[in-house]
Image (cartoon, rainbow, N blue to C red; front, side, top):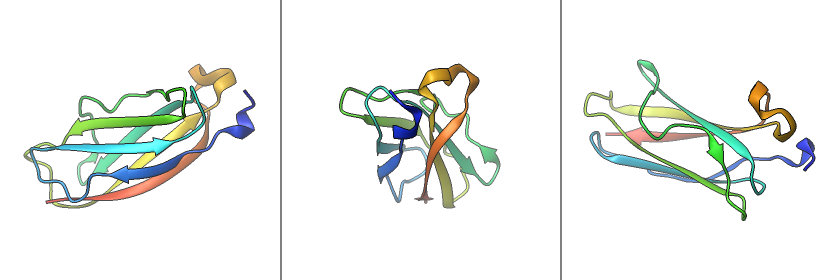
Length: 105
């Protein structure tokens, strides 16, 4: 695969989501793309279980599901999904990104 083919399109994110509930994000990219996700709250980058990098499926679909903590501040927060260079993904060279926002109540 050529790295220039990589793209990331966020298709869906749970919003609004109540504190103490799960949020989901779904994105589209190329098949078997290595992608990561970062969720930023008022206190900084989330370390919630489920927010790990992994590969898209054979159709290029990729998703994440994480628990929004009970102590998360209400507001509109940023999510960044990044596609990495398939030829050298271990170097974590980002080459495609999409950003979405979601509301925590």
